[in-house]
Amino acid sequence: MTKVPSRRNERELAFQCLYGLDFAPVQNERDLRERFDQAVPVADKGAGSGFAWDLVFGVWSRSGELDGVIARHARNWRLDRIGRVELTLLRLAVFELLFREDIPPRVTINEALELSRRFGDEGARSFINGILDAAAAAARTDAQDAGRGAGRDTDVS
Figure 1 (spheres, rainbow, N blue to C red):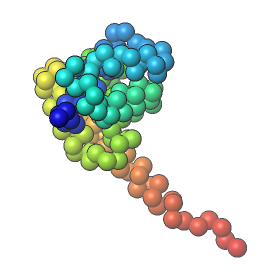
Figure 2 (figure 1 turned 90 degrees about the horizontal axis):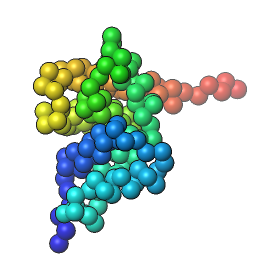
Figure 3 (figure 1 turned 60 degrees about the vertical axis):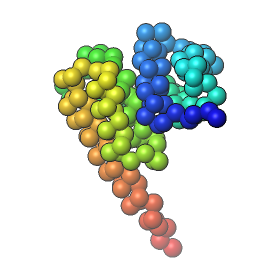
Figure 4 (figure 1 turned 120 degrees about the horizontal axis):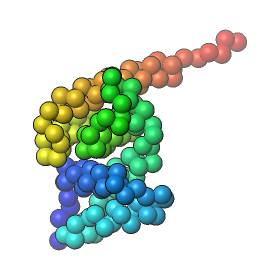
């Protein structure tokens, strides 16, 4: 029986794959998939990795949009001044906040902070937490605004 990796383990795998892309970028989805498959540990081959792949592909395909959100909430910090580990964690978490409605924002933030504990600079946790809290609040506000507008009937016949 094949053991299915936990979401935490798959999130870590996604982080490691995305971090590697910072040093050796890929140009297309086929190359991304190949790199991802190389990153999957032998023990996990065939165990799914669907969640990890969804994260890797989602972050890779929306990196410009994610960087825009991070830059908006990282006041007085240019993206090129943010450490690679921290930027990768932020991209991953912001992707989850914006595009994975199946994951509560608190879980996303806690998981990002846990990854930061393992891989990042100790002093960066409050920085990461601040950006993610702001991004989650903005996403909540955007969702509420969209909900208010969705039920309105503007046709006055």
